[in-house]
Length: 146
Image (cartoon, rainbow, N blue to C red; front, side, top):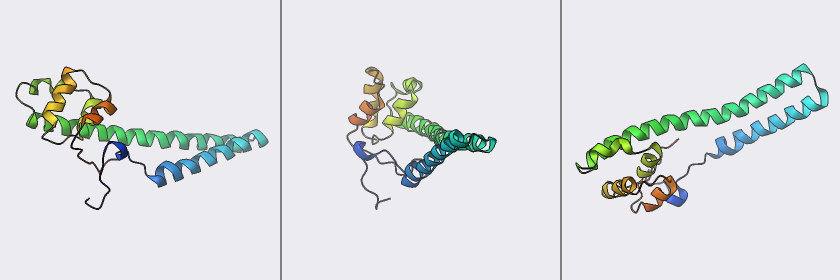
């Protein structure tokens, strides 16, 4: 992925224009027109069209939530394995103390800085993922995110 733009805290979020803008935009237009037809004509067909349009909007959000949930489970497993390998012996028993949000934020830290950063997160009870990500000095990009 060398051709990718270097990733950092400011640009690490992922937006897929065809999904986030085009598909969602079309679904919103469809919902708007179905509401208009329902109000204007009030038929059973327009009611069904409205319900389908509403279902598509709900589906749009659930698809994203389901994908991110699977991704978070993979990150949790990956980070627990990584921490078990990299943390000093005194910190390994504390791996279960990490919340999912902390693990997701810590994944951007390089192997060299991960032990010290993990200790800081646990000792200072840092839970804000943005604050944890800002502490990362040597950002490790993740271009394979959902």
